[in-house]
Image (cartoon, rainbow, N blue to C red; front, side, top):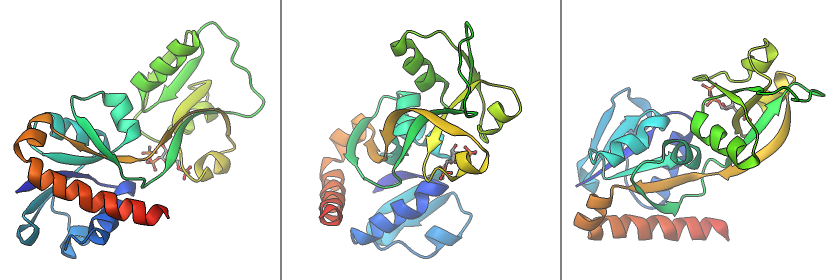
Length: 209
Ligand code: PRP
């Protein structure tokens, strides 16, 4: 039996579609129900539906063998898990954005973000001192209402920035979703995991052509 932590929200649909394309028969309740644990005995699988930011936590603690997590979460959380494959789904990137035509020449400009650790690391590498303000969502509000000079956030279509009159200043890193594994599960369930990895890899390379 494999236990997989799935991220609820925007990655979920693409991740479920990829598993189905790889031949896993996931029941309709997988997409529709509000249950947080879904058993799929026919495939010898069990899924947890978790907050994206928590997926790597479940996998690190070994309550889930595997998880599907955005690279953004992995950069931010730095959990003790192995990254097995790039699923190449939900592409987006982490970027610095703010109000147009503004410079940040203060001593320690304020940076609002859902990714305090990744944002700190980025400015440390650049040798710039900043004040990080942690928010949990709607990050784009911060520069609009004067809470921060810049934001560090995910850009996918760019619509949120545009509709809120913000512009992108720097791209930090490209993001896609990854299949992650608990190191102990990886040793103990190597056959089942190997099979899942090869089925997923096959479908990913087919899609890349
Ligand atoms: C993410 C991100 C941006 C938006 C970017 O937020 O934080 O706000 O998506 O997508 P776009 O470039 O396609 O507009 P999410 O919807 O996950 O919600 P949040 O505000 O709770 O972070």
